[in-house]
Length: 507
Image (cartoon, rainbow, N blue to C red; front, side, top):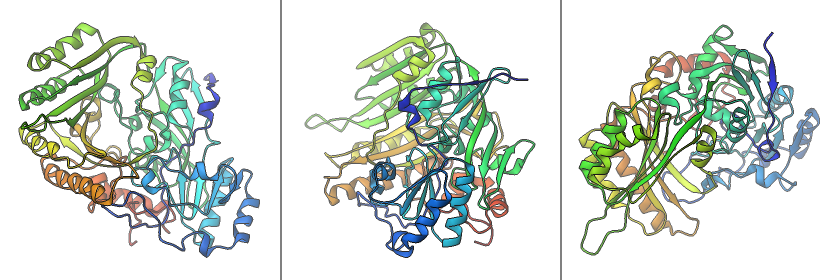
């Protein structure tokens, strides 16, 4: 028999909430200036009697929180504060899968929209609802199987708890940088990170997952059990097929890595071409994110473009220096940190806090290498950022390598031909004027419209974009018809729905 080890981590991590990003009411989110979005009235509280909510509470082993009760406001708050005014009528702190099944039957019977709240990081607010929010913070365990070298994590665990657990055994999975993101949503949408060029995206290593279906049935999905559903859970995004209560993944050994954070100012197009080319030709043991930002122009001078690169390299510092040398010969860094350290210490060093704020991202995969045409449009549009308040930038997450090992149809994650994942991001503050926010959104949308035809790829389902009109094809490409067929089997009445959820056939 395989030895199974229960991994422990601190109380801070046990407070994490994670699960598949699920949907609530079919909300019509505005594409432009509002800093905060409100759901249509009459979805949850107004149409349901208090006695119906009490009935649900009596069915649960866990706790049902209602507005005004202790802890409700914090649990209802999303990471993207643009959607903070969408408040649930109740939050079910489910203790087990039976509780989840009871919630699903109750919501179906009363016609109440629902969402599953994980880390609450849905870019488009799809983990918000005015109906029932199912919270999986009790599903937060992690078990490492020493013989199989797999880790099984609860559907309610956050990334930071997974990292802490794997650190104790010297293993890893492909992981992101933000510890407060829900591991379930991260995995179901594919899961990108610095290790993906050498080990594939996170869901490529998924062995099996347990789900509660819309009917309340609890099933296991793997290569041999419910294989179609297993296929859909590897990139089909959260909130579509059920509520995932656990995930089992293959792990890989880790030891030491070189972390790097480098900045260059006022770069040329020649520099940008060399930067992307050298990184594309780097070994698959290198993972990176390149951020391009408008700088402060000098009087009478054009707005400069500044660059920040962060990442990790599994190898020797001199080898990384050789990769960077042609780039640094063009423009010397304004600051540079390159150091070798223990793998998990490096990951902590590169960690992103992911604090709540107001933001929107619009993404596209670049199928193939960076092109002069894309660099030209970056030069045209990035300096046009119109506001002294807030910020606008474009980021490039390096893909390629092992992310291309599988064909686009082997899993639901279709984006297998890319070298880069581009994302145009804007952030703003609640005190910004409507006119200023509007200028920021219009800049983002026009920049996106120009660059999209040059990228050749779709949009990332884990960066949901409320402005997308062709979101189904953009997120899932040629896999969308099969995903809709699977949805028809496991959720024919479309209980799990949100504005960009996969619909059953004929719905």
